Image 1 (spheres, rainbow, N blue to C red):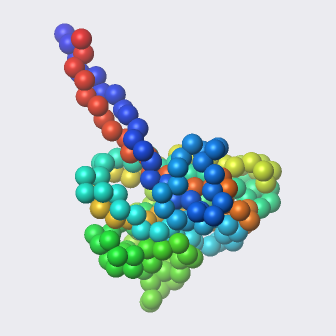
Image 2 (cartoon, helix red, strand yellow):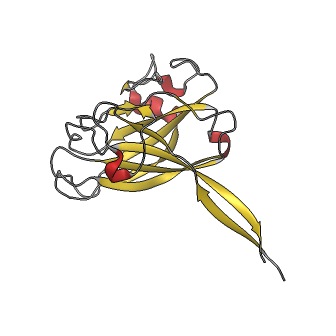
Image 3 (cartoon, rainbow, N blue to C red):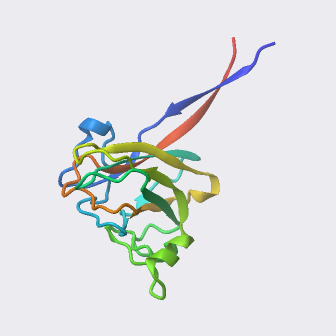
Length: 188
């Protein structure tokens, strides 16, 4: 009996990183949108620029990240990642949780603090830190975006839930949405 095969192919990633010093040499991801990871303090929320995922966007994205700390990280702390979808291309229009659609610190809605406002966003997942030295970039896949969570425009947000700041450069730090495409093939 012939069975269909489902193969998965990856497409070009949508990547938030800093335009001034990010290098794709280590990650292999080319930067497409702005997010400056430089010296994000412990307990601080930071948001990236609004991106256009395209009229014919994909239905599933794997979310990969890279982060580096200014001092040795503490094992078991988290960097939490969120997604804000929008139905409008303008940076500050129709964004959940008071997101600006630009690369800057996130403080929440006009009437509430970030820790409460962030609940209007989609939680993607967390990168759990290891107690490595400052020169070690911590990488991982933190989750998926899929289905109705993906409107045409959107932006990422992170919470530095660790006790240390990120390093004073953004050379190897990023958030990448990697489109995952199911490719159904008839078995021979």
